[in-house]
Length: 278
Image (tube, rainbow, N blue to C red):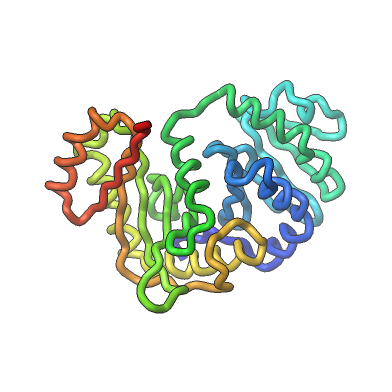
């Protein structure tokens, strides 16, 4: 299978038991839509406003390996907490925790400090916009923002967002839509982003069965974990076609000409423009 963005049954049970408190916290009214718990190949990433706050890997027994970028971890309360042993690995700190320490490490006090550090770094408008698109579509049934920063074993380029669009009379039937998010003043809007998006769509078409099986399973696991997904179906069916969408945000005066050229040259691609007009 070329892409596996889900957990095996053992790790699914572990996350349900060991991270129930974290899922409840990040989906509470204080943080609704700002966090995204993304399932990966037998691990998960916790994103805050598009930035990976922590990568959580399931280790043997009842332990976990947590990886946090030094910019988000250094000089926080968790960094100075002697109950945790942090090892520097490149730009990241690795912290090995057993289940007894998970709640202490991911307590609200330390989470607030991590996100404060993330806000200071500001990794780019387009990353923030990706999260805004996810957040503003959380409760929709017709659109599911199923994944972000997607790569697989054969394709190392990363797709910004992957959505599922509802189809036809069978309400639990969806199709893939790859979304690339660009600011209106991004020079890539001329041709590069369209070529890039065409490549992504073609790649998913080529490995459609693997992508379908992966995301039908991921959807089911997210539902089981109680993560925010609009539809209430326990399972979904993903069918062809695969489509692409370029989401152009802001700078409408600059973007207008480039969007017109894109629509003319690549009529198969959808281009949606978001503006900040008052």
